[in-house]
Length: 288
Image 1 (tube, rainbow, N blue to C red):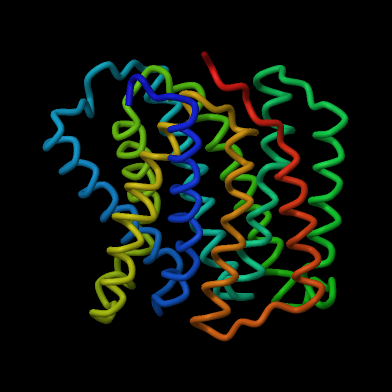
Image 2 (cartoon, rainbow, N blue to C red; image 1 turned 120 degrees about the vertical axis):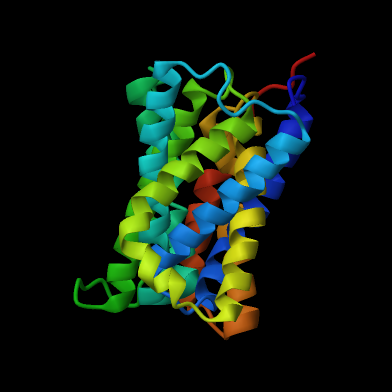
């Protein structure tokens, strides 16, 4: 992945978006608590990534500096909060609203890149943020803090912010460390954070939940994180967010098919506004 081309990076990001889009489905299928899902997901991801690193003779500790380790830990903390709040939003309001709320993260990417990378937003970026906010206001049937749908949406927006922080933060290490190394360390941090509260529920899980969380950890976490971090070697976070416009589409369509979670007209309009906003992200030029 050292000679990753622009087109291959776009393909990796598209596949990662599809795998991340299945996250909500497996989270819905698992009947256990959000912290147990997060712990199991992280543990399966760590095991899969360690095996992959051993088979491919890839570094896990080598080339790690204190600065890299601090960045990995901080990104791991935000990743843990992202997972916990996302699965909590699913339990409150279903896959559709949780996924659409999470789709607010490109707006946060614009703001965070402006602050930390001095990449000031253009007029188009500001229009995109406005469209995202308008879409979010349309998603719930009523905007009341007492309604489960709205509470779930707010948790999902927090999840989107945390994922944006991970996306921007990974730019600090994606050019220096191997993607498997980054994904493994961040998943390990998540597992350590979820360990105190998720262990008991994880031990009491039914057998079928282990299957869903295993698939979630290996494919929607381990593989998806490697593809996601790999593409950030070539793409900036704003360009990456273009492809994550497809994630709520995948999540809602699959949830509609599996769980009969039929989206309302307001949800569809809100989702279209959010997807339109992220599709406005400028594509990075293809290198010669």
